[in-house]
Length: 625
Image (tube, rainbow, N blue to C red; front, top):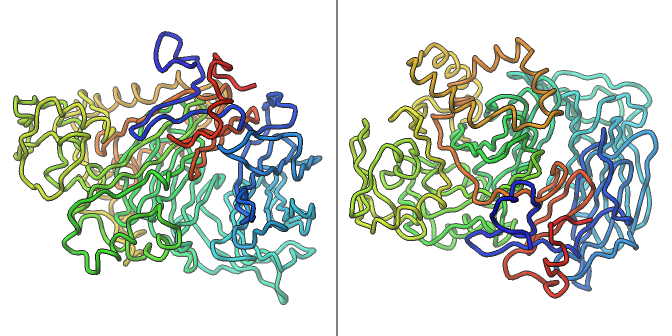
C-alpha cells in the first residue's frame, strides 16, 4: 500500500488519500486507457481530455466516457466504481491522420441510448460533430480552415441549446456556431457589433445564414479555456495574456477582469452557485475571484508547476446550519433551495441570478464550505476548502483565520483568546471544534486552547510570519471595488480607475523586500519542469509583459501576495508519472487523467464497489500500468 508518509513520499505514487469526509481510494480495475494499456509517448502531443455524458439508459448504466490519446479518440461505457473497465470493447474508436483531437464536449440535452452529439476540436482548427453510438460523422466545421487556422483549445455546447456551440482557438478568437448552418466556401466577412477593453465582438456579414454567427476576439495570445456559468448567462475566459475576463454572454458585455500573478491563465471553473470563479495557470497558483465583488478573495499555493485543471466538487460543497442572513427575504425553503447546490442543478440554476445579486458584504453568512480541486504539470492533485472565514472576512469572528499574518503575530492565552500586537484594535478568537463558526456569536468566545490547531486545517490558511504585520488586510482595496452584477457595465471604468489610483502608491522598502522573499519561496523556478522553464524564460524576456505586470500588481486586478488570504491545500498528493490533464468530480467518484493516457477513478468514501478486487498490495508502488 502506498504510505501516507515516510522518506519515499516525494516520488511515490499515491493510491489513496484522506480528507475530513473519509478515504478516497484509487480503483485500479476501473482504469480506462488505450486497449493495450501501454503508456502513451506524450512528446509533442495534445493534452489527454475526458468528457462524460449520461444517456439515461434503462439498465441504470447510462454513463458514457470519451477520451483522446494522441491521434486516437475512444468512446466507452463508463462503469465507474461499480464494475471493472472492459477495454476490449470500445463502442467507438477513431484514428485521425494529419491532425489530432484536442478537446471534446457532449450535448446533454440530446443524449439518448441510441444517439449522442459529440463535438471534437482539432489541432489544425477544424471542429467535427460525430455520433459515436451510430458511428456517424454528421458535419465538419471550418473544414477548409477559412474561419481560423489555429488549434482548437476549448469547445462547448451553449447551455440549454441543442444547436449552438462555442469554439475557442489559440489565436485568441472564439466563434459561435449553429449546427444547422454551413461554413461557406469563402472566408467570412465581419462587421463590428461591440467593442470594449481588449475585446471585440463581430457578426458575420452574409446574405444567407452561415457560420460563424459571431466572432469574439479576446485579449492577446491564446484563449486557453472558457466556462459558462451554471445558469448559462455569463462566460469566463482564461487567456494566455494572464487575464480572466467575465462576460455577459447574450449582451457581450464585460462584467469584470482579473490578472494572474504572472504568466498565462490555463484553466477556469465556476462554483455550483455561480458566486465564485477559480482560475489556475503558469503562476502555480489557484486564484479565487468573487463574481459579485469583482475582486480576488484568495489564492491557493500547493502546486510546484503550472496548474492545468481546476474544478469544483458539487457534492462536497455545502452550507451548514447557521443563522440566516438578516437581509434575506423569503421563506426558509427558498433560501435552502438557493444554497444546497448538490440537490440538483436545475434548482441551483434557477436561483443563480438571486444569489449573484446578493453581495457578500450585505449579509451575515451561514457556515459554508466550497470544495474545489486542481491538478497540474507537477503530477499532483490538490483539494481545497473555501470557507466562510475567507469569503466573509468583515466579520470580527473570522479575523483570526483570515488574516494569517495577524495570527502569526499573536499569542494564544489559556482561554483560547488571542491578543494582537498590531494595529487591529479588537481582539480575536480561536473557533470551536472542527473550526466551525457559530455566526450568531459576534463577541469573543472562550474556547479551550487546544481547539486552536483545529482552525487551521479547515480554513487552509498558510501562516506567513515574514509578512508585515497589519499590512495584509484582504479588504484593503474594497473601498474601490468593482460594482456588483446589477451594474456590470461600470466594471471596466472602475478597473481602470483602480489601476491608475493604486499604481501611484509607494510601498515601504521593508515590505518590498519581504514580498520578494515570499515570491521566491512560493514560486521557485527550480520547481518547474525544464519545458515549463523554457516557456517562462521566453515570457520573462518580453518587456511588454513585464511592463503590463508592473502596472497591474498591487491593484484590484492583481493584489500582492500579502494582500489576500493564502490557502494551503487539504490534500496535495503525487498521483501520476506524467503531467495531469483532467479532473472531474462525479457523484460517487472523482476522475483524473495524465498525459500517458491513463484515466483513473477514485472512489469517494464509502463508495468502493470493487474493494475485493482492489487490494493495494497488488500495486505496491501505486503505479498503474
